[in-house]
Image 1 (tube, helix red, strand yellow):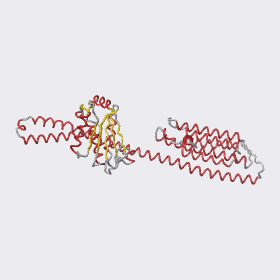
Image 2 (image 1 turned 135 degrees about the horizontal axis):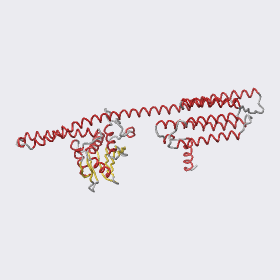
Image 3 (image 1 turned 180 degrees about the vertical axis):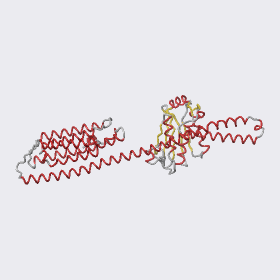
Image 4 (image 1 turned 30 degrees about the horizontal axis):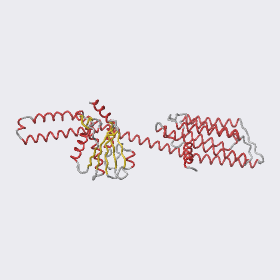
Amino acid sequence: MTPTARLLIAGMSGWLSGARAADNAANPADAIARQNMLQLIHLRWIAVVGQVVTILAVHFSLGFALPLAAMMLVLAALVVLNLASLLRLKSAQPLGPYDLFSALALDALALTAQLYFSGGATNPFTTLYLLHVILGVVLLEVWATWAIVFLTSFCFLMLVAFNRPVIASGLSDQAFFGLFIMGMMMGVVLDAVLLVTFVSRINTNLRRHDAHLAELRQRAAEETHIVRMGLLASGAAHELGTPLATLDVILGDWRRMPVFMADPELAQELEDMRGEVQRCKQIVTGVLLSAGEARGDEVRVSGLRAFMDEVVAEWRATRNSDVLVYETDLVTPFSIVAESTLKQVIHNVLDNALDASPEAVRLHVGVSGGLIVIEVDDDGPGFAPDTLENFGRPYNSTKGRAGGGLGLFLVVNVLRKLGGEVRAENRPEGGASVVLILPLASLQIRRHHAR
């Protein structure tokens, strides 16, 4: 068999089995409904194959005269129903409350037709009605479950009222009764096996759905907690901003007073005080950054190269300056509106890289296709798979300390607010790479309007 034929067969098999049925789900509830519909589709394929084998064996081996054309027509209808169900799963429209009910109801009607053509109420496989009822209890709402109970009961009564016996040539009453008992046993065993198999799968889907909902609730609670912290920090920072600004103005006026100008010692102490006030203002700015805001007096127009040089110089001033290797291919004097939020974001990523790789951190800045690309590499152990999968989510950290992961969470959210994105990956040669991507024009327009 050629590779093309194998791929074609594999693709057709995957389509007929409904593989990846939940890919088009609109929400978690729709995903679980699609998985349950997929179980019904699998069960229907088994029913079609099993009925073909049983009908042919009973007709040709046991001598029962069955209307093969009519029964095969019912099986063809089941195949068409399965193909329609698969097409329904490929659609992006969410499954409604009547989809599963309709599927089970049509299966019950198809079973009734097959039983009618093969002995009616005397057919030992009438026990398969219980399979539909139990699946209805597991899958459907209360009203739909009772509707399935009513439908199966009505169908069985119709089989009794319009009984159509089958003719078995050459079988004694005792042999017929033995075949009936064997058929009942096979029906009960088949019910049990199918129920254990498919109800277990359905319960697995439900447990997976519940676990997913619990995870979403936990994340929502964590993010709500962060929002509350941000609101509290933002309020406190705004309150502190005014007195700090007042102190800065007063100290600036004192610098020009003769008493301070005449005394070098007092002048130096005054400069130290102004430096501490500026430090407090930077701390307030950092608090506002954590809350997702920026101080208006921290925004200014600058060249991109000059801004990045300033970011690197400030970071090196308080860290090991020999660790960072800074490269840039910026030639054109791109103008941006620089602000403390962007500076703090870059510092945060550099700090994380330094924690992972104290010996070497590399920073490269460039512009490509109207995008500012800022790449930070390190030679550390790299990101764990779980960290990469949940990159940017709160408390997603391998540092093992309380509150870990909030830095990258804030980086991702600040970049998103600026119209950019953050990408993280492990480098093939070892270490990790974090890339900040910002649209140059969008950043300029957005920040000018914000002013």
